[in-house]
View 1: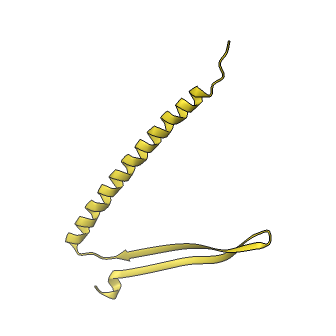
View 2: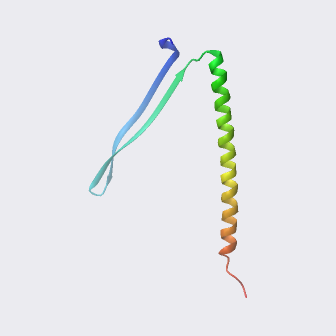
Length: 83
């Protein structure tokens, strides 16, 4: 791998978070990694990423659907009864 085929960029900050008399050191960081792959390896990784993306999207949709149903049942069970 040539040096021009790999890039690593890091930006960040450390700052104090004061709550009353206590202080905690907080951080925020952004990291970017890029590299050039041989075409065959690029195809394998692209396929892998698409597969993971598809599974994550499916899981998110299933979780949201379950959340909607639970919320609907909760609303129905907490409705006041009118006599």
